[in-house]
Length: 592
Image 1 (cartoon, rainbow, N blue to C red):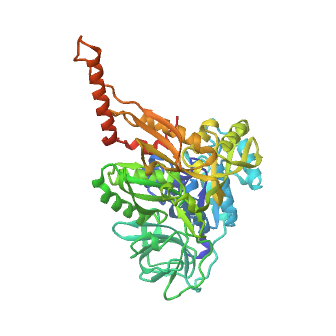
Image 2 (image 1 turned 180 degrees about the vertical axis):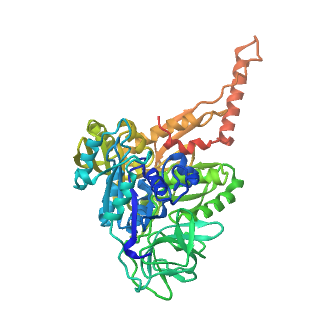
Image 3 (image 1 turned 60 degrees about the horizontal axis):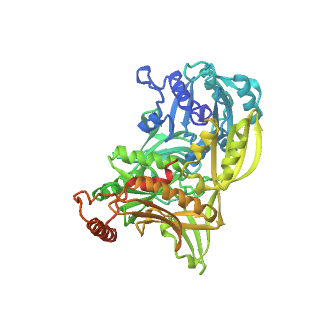
């Protein structure tokens, strides 16, 4: 295909604004998919994506329309996958910005627009869901004009569900988006914007060719990881794989390789070929670092090997997943896994439970901390149980984030209160029409468990939230330990700011009291910092009436039997073992 007839574009939007539905209509209008094969959210192929109504894995597709080759990338909209989105934008020359006409601009819309502007893309604004009774086209158009500085007539008003106005989107793509520039004679450089592992074919790369060409059978090399392999097959997706002899400059397609894991070909890496080797990689590659960690343990220890194998298989197709074995005295053998965010963690957990039939206990998610030792050494810890002795620590640094929340004006007070309650600091407040954009900074650890749920409840569901990691800051952090019947339970330990440790300890032992069953003897639940106890609750013992068989006679008979029982309980307390149920380990996630 002549380069001037290629258009590479993506669709960006907040969650649930109709990205995938618009992609369906485009596939239908261009005749890429037959009517009989059509189903809603066609590009969302995972069951989880269809159930949750979100895009988890991006999907490229090639369409032919009026003699033009249109390459579309349907990107994920969630903040956890923003690096994937930024790589997808790098592979395009233009973006369709979809805004829901009934909801207006949301936090993720803004974040994606900033990413698109940073990648220097042509943005085509599209107002979706104009057929809904709740749609307020004038008001939302004003918001878009405010954001992009475009004119009223530049905004396309469509309904992706009914197909109304969608052909105009295709015309706008052809007219407004520039064709790719690149030289076929230059050394080959292609950007990997996604990769996944296929059980039967190995690692498959989705890539965009900037210079040169990649032919079937070429020896390929990754410039960042240094891995090399063979291009066993190349071609385009429409949306099924369509093999061809080569991928040419400016095109987007897939490469089937003989690589064994996606770790060798990470998102953002540059591919080159042996016969036309390039030395200069494409800009913007970074190693994605997880910053949410949780322990995954099988309910029965026999399943440990299955869990390990399942995670290894998953990590082949998800290069952001990092894991290491973990051993807990209470929970036995398990694996500590690093995630990009809470949604990523949820998805991995559900996939392990569904696809591999595992019953799992997941410990409270935590973030990583940088510990500076008194001897000058730097240590990274991923769970509170790994914290070195307090006497050897000079300072502990925790990750902070820069966040943005978009809410209707009437909720500003409630949102700022919520931010302050999480040790956050409000930095800026600006307005887009009747919506407020609140910029703030906060420690990541305080937002991990339920910040998003609380935000939704204080804003009646209208608040939307987006964040990015900013830096590590030294704070007055302490490790809060929990004791059950006088024994420390490592898996429950958490890091907390000293000012919040008392209330956290009290809350947690209260919640533990609800989930730990009563025993035949009294069980103490305690929270401690170092050697100092800061909170305590007791689970009272079962009381068996041992005096029922006695009748009449002297009171001393009764006392004798009760004393014997007390002696037995005392002995049981020394040797008895408290059964800690798996719910106890997710107690921090449980809201009142």
